[in-house]
Length: 165
Image (cartoon, rainbow, N blue to C red; front, side, top):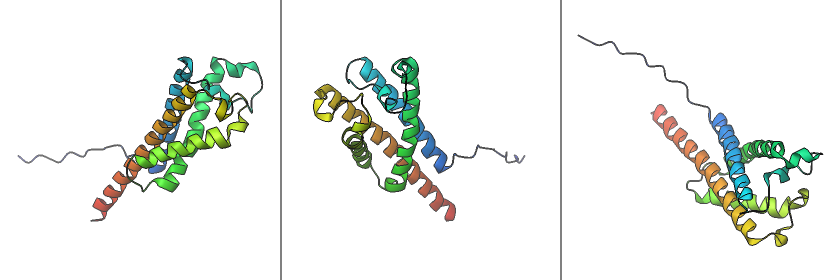
């Protein structure tokens, strides 16, 4: 007896653009939540809510609703950061570029964008725990974004090469 070949319908893989979007959104929400727990357990003096302070009026931004909206907003900004990484660094292999990207983001937020956030002290006035914790979180975020995007980019290249042969 000859078995008929069963047709297997696998779902189509996510487009690369969609993967970058979801990686950025998840990365921002996840690492924003980790940042909130770092604040809650006194590893840092910077709350996620600091992101709302320049644009939102009212005391609600300092409560739990402000925290949730801040973390979601971090996810949205993270999508932009993920697409920037995709545009500039997707071809580079290894996690070192993700570490570098995290350091660049840290420097951008703490030195260039710092005046936008009135709830964030100037860099020289922050305590060492805050600086070290924030630096490490940005590095881990950069590795997450960088490695995820680079891995998918490399896999897509291999699949395209196999399909063309």
